[in-house]
Picture 1 (cartoon, helix red, strand yellow):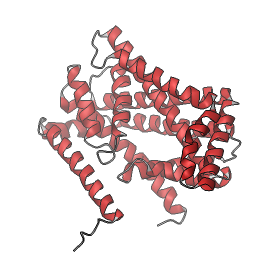
Picture 2 (picture 1 turned 120 degrees about the vertical axis):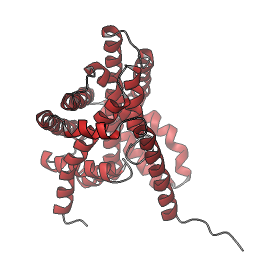
Picture 3 (picture 1 turned 45 degrees about the vertical axis):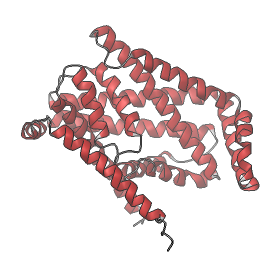
Picture 4 (picture 1 turned 90 degrees about the vertical axis):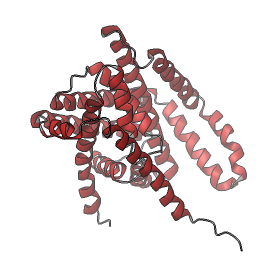
Length: 323
């Protein structure tokens, strides 16, 4: 009797179950090494004023992210009203924080701009470019933070050279893609054997979009500057959270750990980064002489504020008539 193969939906449930198990296991391990009652007391005694400042900073970060996205859309000649982009970004944040995947938000952004772009491929290319520039901004901020931490305090929890090399590699990889889009098309040409017409059209749309980016270098420079600005604001957001919790962590150390934690939690091994993010904070904090308790406080309270803000995306989503 043949063995019945698991259905795709069953595989998704298994994958979510594995991610949940990883998150729970990591959090349980970290909490077992802290005084939970003292942890809760510290969270309850947090400064409400500084938490409010942190929320304002995060809202500015979202606005700056919308501006960065619009710069890329304008470079491709795609007209979308800023208000529509802001609403789409809020919904994307809601999906990223309340679905067991950080890809759902990008799907929303692509869907919302595919019609004005006239192409899902073009909308996808723009979102991917936004992601790549954001990632490069993350690594650059982390490299600067590590350099400042090494110079000011003399400690190197993370090798500074690794971060600078990572930034240079990402820049060197992105440059040929933008400077020679036709070469990207040739590299992807073997994929046309799967479906010559459909795949060929997508490759043509992709190379055309890359060519438009190449012809508008000023827009890309501004967008990269916006990406660095967004990541710096993200670090300042965490600084405000640390102040609220009275955790004595240096800003340049947060400039290192925050970008690294964001990159690490992108690896799809946990539910929305829970556990993995806190473990990354704990590793770094212990290397600079701070307790795991402080790492958990900063990471979890910051995440709670982000999730609280992203609930505005649920309001936007349901106001559109979705269920």
